[in-house]
Amino acid sequence: MASNSPEAPRSSKSPIHQIVRGKSQATFKLNKDTLLLWRRALLIRYFKILGDDPNYDVKWKDFDIKSKSIDINDEQKPFQWKSPTDLLYKSAVEISFNNKKLLVVTLFYTTTNAMIQGKTIDTWLENDYKEIWLVIDNLVSQRTKGDNPNVDELLAQVTPHEPFKK
Image (cartoon, rainbow, N blue to C red):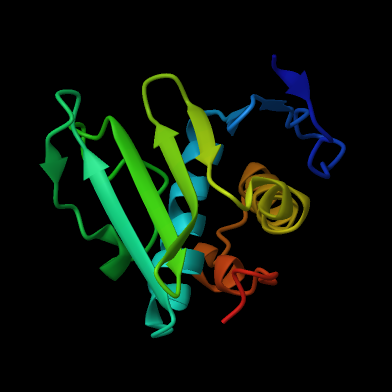
């Protein structure tokens, strides 16, 4: 039975970011711009930064529509407001701590949905999720005003919370 969870903070111009909770997962809806920013946030915050910690095992995978793994490696390049490839169907980041899986976040590019699974869903939704949304809302707002913010720099400043703290 799915239920609605608390919303992420939002600016006056941003849509409501509603979370739908299931028994063992949660989902939330994105749009074209926020999907790209969530991809970047997960790449920077977890794959690059947290992945450097030897106690964490962070796996990133991109897939095409046939669920075939594709190598993009766009974390090495500056952020762009477009998909890194037209082949991209979904991306998943899996985070483990001391060999215990904590969380998997999957982004679906055709439906612009995000799905979270794992033992730490509630903690992640209450902390990291809200922090990331605040930064993403700020980035979208800056872009709307014609500014060109340094996306990677701002996303790297997201405050990590336990158990995702380096």
